[in-house]
Image 1 (cartoon, rainbow, N blue to C red):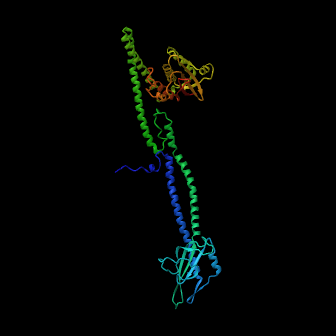
Image 2: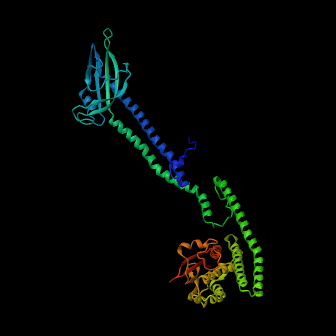
Image 3: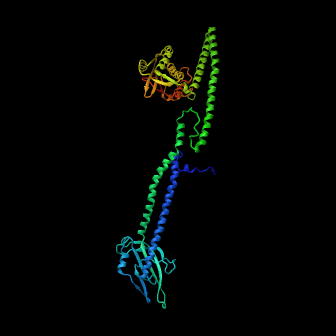
Length: 493
């Protein structure tokens, strides 16, 4: 036997991703629609009750009035019912009145002999009319429903006695019937006139509820935007005071989670920084001792082994340097006070000049584009607000990667361009480039797109974090006719 609880009403009512605002609207309007339907049924029944009471009162008066026109004379009856009065009662097609006098009850005397007798369960009761529903076959002349049709009627039956005091008392039955079509039209009119205004209120109320729920949920929307607009590394606590009372416990729980994550991240940063600092000195000593050993021996086999040790130590030192820069380049570690206005063209020109010797040793032509040279020669300066040391590290990483992987005889061009309110620093090479499928992965730490070179897979993640710290972005694109183009976008001043 499955003891699991059944899905909740909300899950059965619709998809689980239904918005809170829509759910509130449904739960507010759904009872109103049910009440609207119940109100319509109740209104119809009340209209039927009151109209029947009024119609029955009219039939009662008509039956008594007709009874007064039948007067006993001796053992017989005198019917004082002018023909003109009969025509008035019988010729209205919209509200036709039928009547019949019978004595003894059931023995036709006057009127329409098609009126059905009272049900048998109605025992005769003097001077107090009975009311019941029935059907009458319409006479041949034009009337309600057309010739030969059946007319639904409401009937009042009044039992009376007559006769001389010394004679035998006799019974007389006076029946008056009226068609129900007019009454049903009245029911419908009352129902329509009652429900139509209520129906018009439903859309209006829907709009009011929709606007009201939107206004009530604005604090939640502000909270959502505050969370959505954050960097993945922004672990600052949320503002509890700005949250609605109903979700403050949720915000506090989120703040506790953020605090725990922040402590773990800080612990990892401290570990990386401390480990890198502790490893830097032994590796530097290892390189020095390796250099001394290489100088003190002439054995080719030993020299080859020492060169491998020196290369491994150099790679380890480079990795440690990258780890330290990665910890420093973390967007969460940015200090706004360290930012200062920076002339981008002059700044990039200095970095390119520093990298030219390394490019020449690799047999690569490294230079600035014509746009940057024109700006440097007298154009309007392109300025950004930046941390000069971190941005230098980012651009140096990009140029160093281009030098490593372009290959001898290649070309590297660095350009600085304005783009709306932003400044673009574009580094283009004609090397092998990076496959489009790998361009998203190379921004992950310790991921490399090639086995060539001695990189450690931290260069582009460092560039991404430094650009994010400055409010910018980095993108990889194809260079023409072949190669890779690295685009650094920074907000200008």
